[in-house]
Length: 399
Figure 1 (cartoon, rainbow, N blue to C red):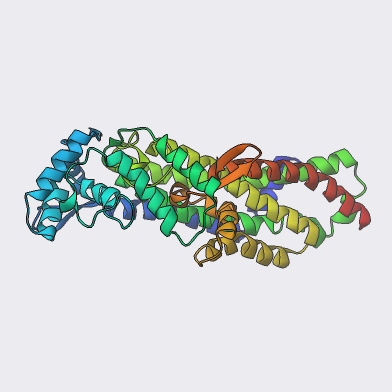
Figure 2 (tube, rainbow, N blue to C red):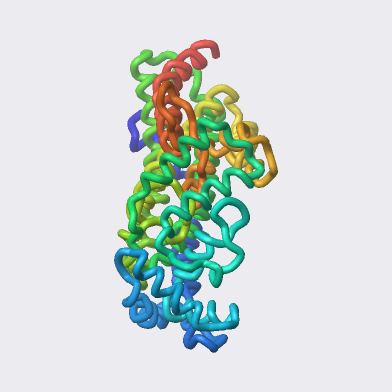
């Protein structure tokens, strides 16, 4: 059977059509919710906020004075303005209104316990060493973390941190973060949809008593049929996923604009060791998410080929796919956390990726979580595409 025939078999169940439509509808609703969640204070001493599209004009005006390269001159200007207020709350409210987000960055760079840390921004004489302070902040995070990093890993992390392009580019970018968070939920829904479809991919013929007929075919035809099944599954999942992501992107970025695409991710994720702007981070996340989805659904298809039972495949696949997401919330040993972060469901979380400091040894190279995942996932996908067609024929022959 060709890809079209296999595709029709996959989309025939009513639950597939309903669930697919729900994902698309939910993605649109979440995009509007995300858009409306973007807020900015109307006045420094006010408790009222401007929301969504109404906040856009105010945001653009507010960011004019700090948009562009975040030089130490600008940081010193903000620090000096902050110190003109004797009360901390008043200083933060007024400075955040005039220079949105900068106080938070100064606090992350200077206020921490340990080497290079301060108790208050009032104690900081100058922001000339802001970018050096970031390295101190990362060192402090490594030392105080519950995870116990090896010395080679600490050296690699600090080395990557020192390579980060400076000065940072600064602009309004909160809508990018909202987009990532919203798409993260869609990722999970699409994975669940894919698991439902994959759990019946190879048990369909057995359930319909077509396996005895298929076994009389040629090896090449049966192997090609298995490949067509995998391609049809991937096509259906990607259609739903890409449609949902594109709709969300259109709503959010048409509403708020694409400003901030070239801003350094460190303006939000201060201790991230990835030398990326928001657009580059989105592309990286998109690649890891696509690879992760393929690994999960093809892994479920492989399991269905072995078990030839829809219910068993679905239960085991869901547990295997999402258990790493749950386990990552517990205080586990550093080595286990590193392995858990390599699971596809966690690699579809761009915020988790950007905040990850873990390093892996691959020969003579030190690799980030993302690079290691790309290598591992590509190996798994190639193996599954190679093994599944051969096993499909062998299992039919046994029956």
